Structures are given as C-alpha cells and as structure tokens.
Image (cartoon, rainbow over all chains, first blue to last red; front, top):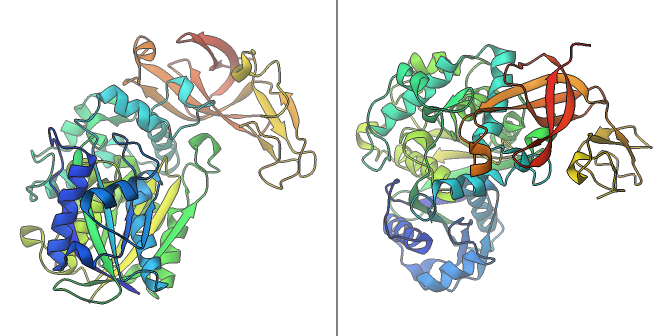
Length: 377
Length: 121
C-alpha cells in the first residue's frame, strides 16, 4: 500500500517562454505545498520524458535543477501511459521499502516549444519506422483506422464519439485551468475540420504546455492522503499493424487485474478517470473496461452518466480533450483531479461519491496500458 | 533484418514480403530473423499475392509533412492479406471495410509504397 499525499497541477495551454524544467518545477512546488512537505523530505524521483527536452537522463537533470539528492531516480518512457506507470513505479518503490516519499513529475512546453508539424512528426514515431511512418501516417490516422473498425463492429456513430467531446468540454468549463472552456455541441464536433476520418479536430486532444506532479508516500501523512490500492499494466503490440485485434487491446484485462489486486469489483467503482487522447480512445477504453456496454458510451454521455452528479463521474477536469495534453503530464491531470475529488476539494466540480476510483491510461496506439485503483482514506 | 528479398517494397521492390515460421507456421509482416510466436530461427520469406480484404480505413486530411500535404486527403487502410498477415497501405479513396483489394507498389510522395485498389477479378 502507498498513499498519494500531494498533487500539483498547472493550468494547461500556452505557457510562452517556459521550458520543460520550468513547468516541472512549477508543478513540483505545488505538489510539495499540497502535501505540506519540503524538498528535503523527498528521497526518490521518477519522471517521464519531454519531446522538447530530449535527454538520456531527465530524472537527474531535474533533480540537479530543483536541488534534490534522491536515493533513487528513474525516467520512464511509455508514451501517454507514462504518467500512471510512474505512479505504479512510485507505489512499488514505497511498498518495497526503497523509498519513503517519491516525487512523480511531468511537464513539457509541447505547444510553444516546437512547430505543429514538428509535434505531429515526433508523435507519429510511435508508428513503425519502416512499415507505417513512411506512408504519411499520423497518430490521428492510426486512431482513425481503429475508429473505422470500431464503428463497423459495434455500430458506434460519429455523433456518439462527439457526445464524449461535448461532455469533456462541459466539464472543462468548470475548471479555470483548462485550455478550452467555450461550450460546444455535437453538431459543432461533427462540423469541425476533418483530420483523419472519422476523426475531426474536436475529436482530438490539443497540444498543450503544462506540468503536473505528485508525492507518493509510505505513510498517510499530511492533510490530503488517498490510498493507492493497486496498479497493473498490460502491453500487447506496439504498432497498430501488429495488433491482434482493433477492438480488444488489453485494457479490460489490465483494469480487471488492478481491481482484483485491490480486492474490488467494477461495480464498486464510484468515479473514473480514463485516457481520452481522441474520442475513439475514450469510447474504446470505457467499453473495453466495462464502464459502458459496447457501442453505448456516447449515448450514456448524453444521458449524463459521466457528469459530476451522474452514476459514473468521469474526467471532471475536462480530460485531455479539453483540459489539454502536454505529454507525460497530460494524463497525470486526470489523477490530480481525482485526488481533489476524493478529498472533497473539487468545489463546483465535486462529485457526490468518489470513494473508490479506477484510472486507466494508454500509450502509443492503445499499445501500453496502466490501470490504478484508489480508495479514499 | 532477415535475408533481403528483392521483391520487398521496403527494399525498393514491387511486392510485399511475408514471413512464415517453418516450425509453427505462424505468419507475420515486420521482418525479423526469428518467429515472434515460438522463437524458431530461419523463417521462410515469400512474396505475398497482394490480395486481401480491407479491415480498417481512414482518410487523412491533415498530413504530417509537405510531401504528403500535396496529396491530402489520401486514404490509408489496413488490409488482411490472404497469407494471414495485416498490412498498412495507401488505397483508392472510395475503398471501404470489407472490400476485396489487390496491391501494387507505386511511387507516392517520392517513395515506393504499397497501394491497394479494388480487386475485380
């Protein structure tokens, strides 16, 4: 067992003139303050990577910059799944006795630190360098392929996908840190600029600047502890061409494994935070995990199931789709919001119940999966 | 990379190379010197017929680079070849899931790439 005792989240969007280390610093300051700790209390540091600050040793680069002298440091690379994989690593370090307080941090100026074409080309490299990338394929194209098959097999429509984008935007309108806060409708999503069919621009998360950090501790210390009950991973195929199935990527198995390790069932989950790089990503993960029946996620969103006062509050900060996506820290914002929800600090966004939470992240093209189960103290 | 196959489009050829394990008969697309299913070495490499069925399809409007922006929108598909492997390729814009297709290697954006058209045979 380990405890999430502090969270720091910057606003996402444009942070002109701020670099990776600046955004990691800002998030870490906030996380330490939230936990009531000083930097000298930290004995381990885990972080991800930054496309605008590529480095063989980002963990120790940040440790030196921030003035930490950890007994354990480790940079992890699992694409969009990195943030939750870092939390799993911190949890394991604490459980094994290697560390007492682990700083988990991500941050990147992905929006202002490079051109849009450069960002797209870097991200497309999760595709195969010989068999996929040379075709002019992009991340939205890989997910567009998945979406086309999903619609074919389960009857999901573009309007169903759009309903999830609308829900995420409605949530983001309640969070002043979100990148996009103007309301949108299903028709707005359907009429938005095509990117890679069936995905339009409003089906896609933005590229953002931002940072997020946590402190994971061995003790339920400080004013806001939340129990990390269990974590699990699953990795089947890196490339979409090599995936055995375009409708079963291992997310369901991963989440079931985490829930079993926490001695919980899906029926006990009161709130969820699910990776939403595209509306198809959110649809697939919700339905593969079992939080919605196949083909029904969009309809359930329209019925209000994923709202703060619904049966399964989901990504109440607005998700990647509307809060924003700055790389490693992107999905960490889902956990930052869940920490607020589980400690009753989410203000106007507060869900009625968030005592048991399931979080799921994916990296690549549904290649890497990480599930977390959290319980209120 | 296993033995270089002259017909392999990734080596400048005009076909698709498929590998098959001599021990367990598993077939795959991404070239390597062993079977990813059972680990046996020395797989067979052969030229695929190029015939298959569209499994997934997208139309790319937002291209990643200038050479592809000139072509946008372009269709990219995943095709299940009759040899039992799945291949990503370009395709005629009108193609859809379930269509029977065949492959020719064409120069697209200055490089040889697999391209699928409707198989009317």
